[in-house]
Each structure stands twice: as structure tokens, then as C-alpha cells.
Amino acid sequence: MDKYGLAFAVLGAILAALMPGIASAKGVGMVGEAAAGVVSEDPSKFSKVLILQLLPGTQGLYGLLTAVLLLSKIGVLGGQPEDLTFAKGMLYFISCLPMVIVGFFSAIRQARTAVAGVSIVAKKPEHSGKAITFAAMVETYAILALLISVLAFSSIN
Image 1 (tube, rainbow, N blue to C red):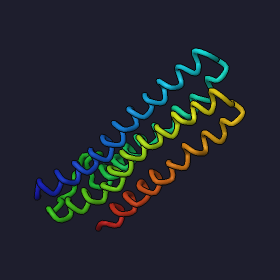
Image 2 (image 1 turned 90 degrees about the vertical axis):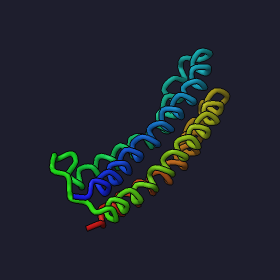
Image 3 (image 1 turned 180 degrees about the horizontal axis):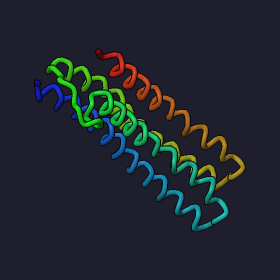
Image 4 (image 1 turned 135 degrees about the vertical axis):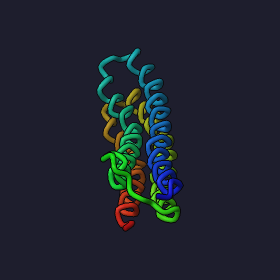
């Protein structure tokens, strides 16, 4: 068994969970800070800003899903890891990069969009749907990254 192949595959899974998770935590915090100011002035806007705060957290979930699916595929979660060559381990590692990179950057961008949305809710709460839509548009790219990463490593034989 080539330990380096397995190590690179596991590293890909770890980074897929870690990087979007870090960015999601940062993003949820950024939006939470802005939302706290709005809620301190008008507690009735809590549910509207909470939705905006939750949005940047999804990339962390997508990264975790990517990691769990890959670790399951290569047998790490089942207790019987596959014998992976270095080349195959690198393929698994590379297949995680869309989720690692896009998940990280989209969580931060989505948070910035959601912070702007909190400002919309503060001034015109009736337009909260528009604020949510703006932030949700960034989500599209995180979903595409999840899809390509999962399709990529699922197709490795």
C-alpha cells in the first residue's frame, strides 16, 4: 500500500472541510456583527437578518459533505482504507480543489453581500427578500463547486 496516495486523498478531504469551514465561520461572524446592530435598534427584524446570517454557513456544510463522501468512498470511514497509488491519491486531492477554493472565497463574498443585505433590512425591511436573493446568488457557485468535486472524485476508479 502506498501511504502517500492515501495521505493525499485524506488531505484533500480535510482541506475540503477545513477551508470552506473557516470562511463560513468568518462569514457568519461578519454578518452576525452587522445583524446585532440592527436587532439592537429594532428586535422585530431578528428573523430577517438571521436568514442573511445563515447563508455564508452553507459553504462549510458543502465542504463537510465533500469530505465525508470522499472519506467514505476511499474506505477511511468504513475502517478499510483503499490501497491508493500516489497518482490516484493525487487525483482525489485535485478533485477536492473546486470545493476548497470556491467554497472558501464564496463564503467570504456571500458574507459581504449579506452584510450589505442587513443594511437593506435596517432601512427597508419590506425588501428583505431582495437582500436574501442577492446573497443567495453567490451560493450558486458554491453548489457548482460541490457538484464538480463530488462528480470528479466519484468518477475515479
